[in-house]
Length: 411
Ligand SMILES: Nc1nc2c(ncn2[C@@H]2O[C@H](COP(=O)(O)OP(=O)(O)OP(=O)(O)O)[C@@H](O)[C@H]2O)c(=O)[nH]1
Ligand SMILES: [Mg+2]
Image (cartoon, rainbow, N blue to C red; front, side):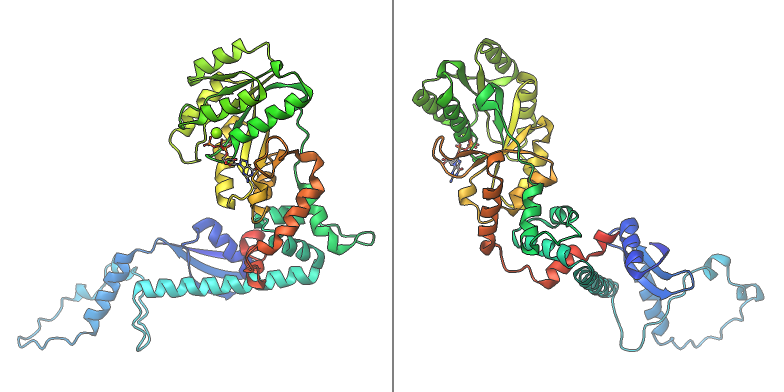
């Protein structure tokens, strides 16, 4: 068991220090105010056997001493001197009568107490923010209502203006969100190049490739375009792309493995635009690393777009963004906006990972449902705002306090 003493200016800072050094398993043994500040004694790695032994010793001591008929031999004088090691043993304070708490019970109780304490401190800190920075608190509250994740909401709220004489405070949360969205203008469909769409399974990669190809054909010759499929995994994947290629009157090529992909791209050097459709892999799919390697080696000069489903859950989107980061995607494409119950998770992912958003897809129609993101800033925020009613109503005061008043934000 490691026991350490912490001194800090406030209980909140002391707890933050404990948590940072000893982790969430740390148990607070005592706390008191001293001249130096708040003193907290915390411990980790309880030695359960030590505690159990101590308990057994206590029980043994409490058990009635057997009556021994034989006379007890007097102890030699030297035995009266306790060895140093024994003297150094921790003093075990006997529990108060009736309080026969096991180690696990004690631990649970201490953890409950800590949770209570932290909850109280979080409520205090959040009330403080509400009183001192009401507009910032409002921004945090509004962004949370849009399902923006707490870390991103904090980031956005950091630029809440102090002077609001010239702005309508009610509009500030959405205005800040709009300003922080990393929307970019992509010129793939104007100038060409080699572009690939990657992402998890079923997120709309092939459909997006078809939309981009159709968009190109609106103002360019179909002859200048070629489609490539590296998806030899899913049955019917190539047939799906071939169907779109046939409709548009453009050639479709299959590539298997890095060397083949490099060869195919070399053959297509004369094309102004080459669009590569890739196989879908989940972030934890063991085949993903190999697929990323194939793309990095076979199409090193391609511009990668990460397709992220707008209706995806925050954690899944975070995983996807991390899993495909190795390809250094130039931007992401938010698909299935029409199916999303909220846009908070998708927008948070883009902001957190610094992933520019190049295109927005809000339906299955090719190419009508593909939109250049940089032209849709206000529309995107409006959709996010309209979907607010779908966000679960658990965003109450205590959850706001937990997210924005917690010790971790002040550590
Ligand atoms: N509602 C809606 N559906 C879409 C959108 N984009 C694609 N889809 C549909 O989503 C389904 C899967 O699309 P695909 O393009 O095959 O997805 P994928 O990522 O290529 O799938 P895999 O290759 O199997 O990984 C199809 O039914 C598409 O029509 C969109 O923006 N909105
Ligand atoms: Mg596909």
